[in-house]
Image (cartoon, rainbow, N blue to C red; front, top):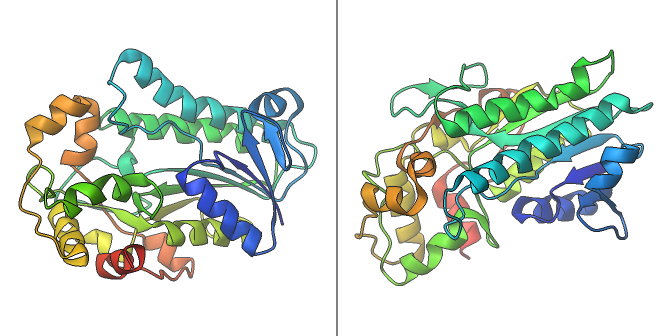
Length: 300
């Protein structure tokens, strides 16, 4: 199949490209610079998208980048890197004479309000709890421009991901050195839910959506089955066990808030208890359904 990927140079994008190529699909990446099997965002904006079977957007500035202060300018970068790229692709799809069968947007479970007790499925409401929740709401709304402006056969699939665990980037890589130096520990109280997914499972799910031509549903929660009960303390313990290092130094809430700012600190100090209900109903099988299996593979 012919697949176009926005944000293909990032942490998730690189893994997805490898998997798509391994499965024999023809992939074109949207990037800032032109090249072989590449088109630029400016090309998409001015000329539209080439004929394809699926479009996937993974683009977005890292919200939790600790090297970036939470200024109004950086906040706008976070918003525009998601909404502007999504709108560009959605408008290109709506103008296409031969639109793709699948239009896949990877967002986040931050759409659902933080709660230690409430359990969320794909049918649960959200989108107005905090900065991240409203961002996901507006982000997903921008994607709808590609399928609602006219009668097209494109299926929009919103994949709401939890924390993505992988070897070469993301949350796990930033945690490994403190834990290896015996400086790791729970974040805040440690009681907050910890929705997560192994990067291979996320990319396999995206491949399934592409290969089933969007038939597996409008919203899919990309979280492991154990995310329904996993907490930050559970993750801390599992990582400590996998590394054979103690994890007794908690990161206090006030320090997280001082480092990241209130809007971003919420993402670490609170969480959502999310179930992959429709994901499982679609027939998807997780290779790494719990923290033990995921961390065993990633740290082997």
